[in-house]
Length: 423
Image 1 (cartoon, rainbow, N blue to C red):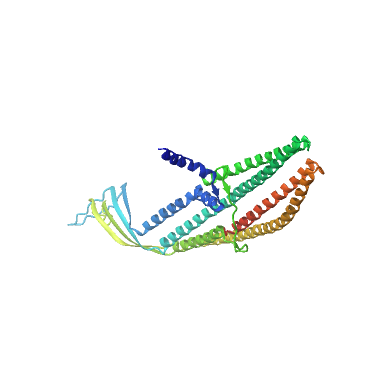
Image 2: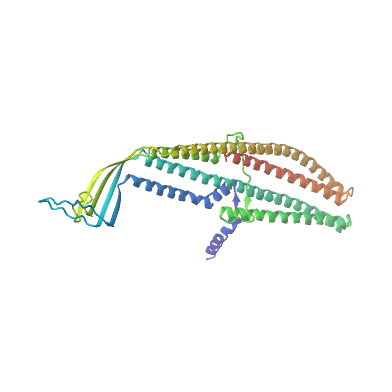
């Protein structure tokens, strides 16, 4: 029974232990945010919309039927006014009606339905790619939140290490104060510095919490306050890759859509041929006006339609499409220019942080040596605790600079690859 209780307790504590050992990666956060975005729902809507339009176009190849009915009262009717011996000519009624069922079957439409369906498919592809463009923008937002949280996390760790170190030194100083080897003021100054750094840690924790709360909302799941944000690794990435953004594909698909619209316009001005049939009943019979009783009749044949002159409307519509293509081309060119400029900026940031990191390492190495010597001097009463704290603060600043610049360099590389569309 005791063993079962222990197992049950372990199972109950499992989610808690997972929460405190939770680790997050940038790729995971980006994928979750993109998959949960309301924008993602648009893909199914676009597909449904296109399928419905294509189904409607398919019906144009099916027989079309229409029921027509008319009733007329004529104030005057045809009267021959001649009596012919042996021939009984019925009087045409003034009350007249017809009821017809008209049926037509498209035989040739100039390729209108085929091209109209291709236009719907091109529009669908462009809409879906436009959705991907909107989803791509989420990457930049997630990058910012993730790296801000990462900076806060590493700052908190570093400041915590400094506090631990100062606390160890404070214990030694308190021991010396108790033995009368050092003034109480030295311990107070050191204790005051510890409290200041703890304030900084609190500010960092609040900033980190804000980033976590926003990121949690994006990825649709809780993030533990103690979650570990892992630093992305850019291994052997070629930073001079070509641009591969969804916007470029979107512009290309929009141009294809304009071309498909042009083909539809061309089909609309070609002749169309349909087979027709009409079944009807009327009084009098429209095919034999002297047959005044309600009689059935039918007509079969073919119908040719050709709008060969539309006052150049189609020609002007094509010119509008060509202008739209030129506008798209200029937008694409402008977009690629902006991406190249942004890439130069990111590449410059990478180079800058690389140089700063090298300087940071040298500065930190020198400052650590200064702190070691200062601590020895402080212990021997050569310098005051205030002077020692100043050197410790300089070392902490150097450590923070090295840490932040390292993260910023990785962030700049991520931004560069994201800007180029290669991540």
